[in-house]
Length: 488
Image (cartoon, rainbow, N blue to C red; front, side, top):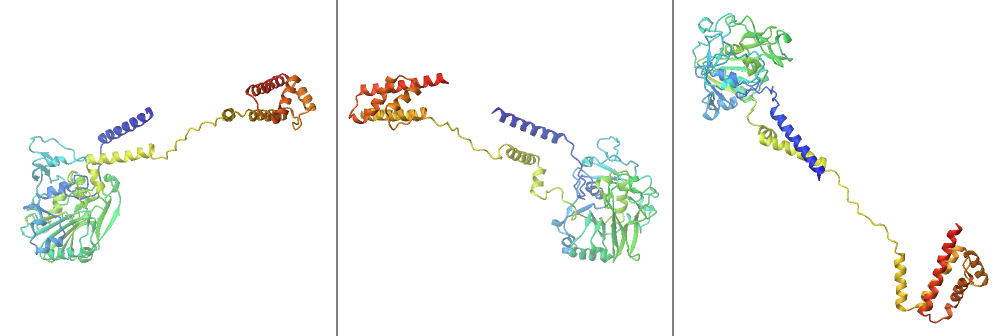
């Protein structure tokens, strides 16, 4: 019992230790590129979605349906297909007149600096009311004043009631029906901005350009040289010091495009093209393959939000803007029952305890139990009891002659086995040999032999006679054993 108690006490101590260790162990960052508008992880779009809401006059409208579904009503998008964007903690204001590169809480009145150049931690400060995000960089050769820039290349001030469609994701691969509707929609005079590393082959073939990728993993600027540095080609918005994309595992560049309809808007510092515009009918396509610069991890780096502002500023400022989440990874709803269980702490610990219980059961109880071996008592020597029973039977029947005959047979067998004498004739020769070998007086031996020879002639034997015969034989046995011991 004590051993079982020690085992279960040790198991309970291990469970408590693991629970405490799990509770106090810092959770590692999840670097999954979700590109989800509500995801605060490094590769989510929590910040850029809220910033983009203030980059356009009417804000942005979040849509999660395919473009074919959106355009099924000839451009009259139903309320079921759209969701007007609202910042949960209050609006994000875009500050153009300050040199600050940090997020500040206007309600607190404190302009304490937050070092966004350090490793990505969290972006919960954006949930505060009236957060301020600066989009101006002092290192620009031009200015963010739209009056000083070309309306052809940088059209914040361009007045239009066209519609914009923006999709920022890891991969943009719509179905063929959606591609057909998208091309028709742009041809009518609307604008599409797509930032992705992987673009649908149907779009590539239709708009006559190709892409290729280079796989690497960058940590600092010195690790990758110019392959992760991006800039614009327009001198009005080009910066002397290019923007750096950190921790990007892949760079995708654009090649073999039609120069008659395509304008290069941005390049990597190694001269590879990453940002183009394609004139299509009355509208425009904008393709940017540096999609990771729009993620949370890179957008909080000093000056990077200015790149996002300038890239999206090629779209008309006053147009109604649709922000697509069709190709974003849904991080809120677990895709499997196990993920749902692990997303809820009570269910997660119940799951872990169940696994631990099964393991403990397998260790202590599931092994093959040996059948209990019964205690087998040694066999008793029942010869004496059997003899007594037979004797009692003879005595009960008063068969004294039978008892005497049995005693005589036992006596003769003893003589044969003990002294090696033949007992078929009990004559004088037998008498002399037995007397000599046993050392017992001849009177006793002669009396016993005489009575044995006369047993068959007696019809009955009295109790006294039987008792006397038995005493003589017992005396013979005792003297034989005594004499034999002395000889040895």
